Image (cartoon, rainbow, N blue to C red; front, side):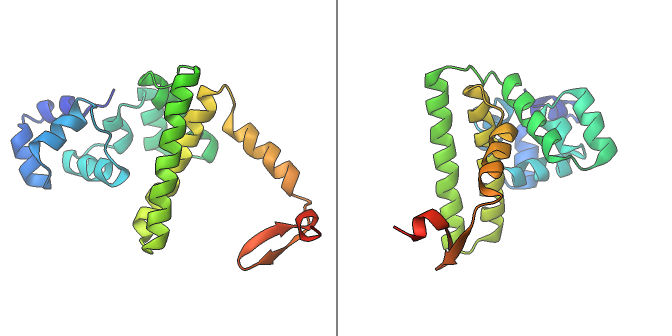
Length: 180
């Protein structure tokens, strides 16, 4: 659960005051506070900056993780992986059933569509955001299917690390496919 409402009330601000100050509608801010809508990365940054609190704290990450993030200011891929899983578990997003996995797969596809749009428009910010969001959705999907995405990545790398092939028109073609 995020801490948006809690922090706003601690600072004795109304939704209208915050919305006016940062340029959001009151409805949008209310949706963020009630978790009916998930803020994008740049929105989390803007809100954290406005409230003068760490993003991890505002997102509602566990206190131990918040302290760790504040201490290191940077996380390893493995730590981020675990933080995403914890975040999804805290929101009851990982249920390990087919229906939830299919719903999460739709999110993966949606993020890949946004990535494609970012690449087509040469929008560096959208590309970066979509790549990050794609990773988040894949981590959650893997957990829902009872896989560890890092294990999947390791297995995939072990398959490709000695692969031979050739780049044709910007795409890598493995050697076995060149002879067909």
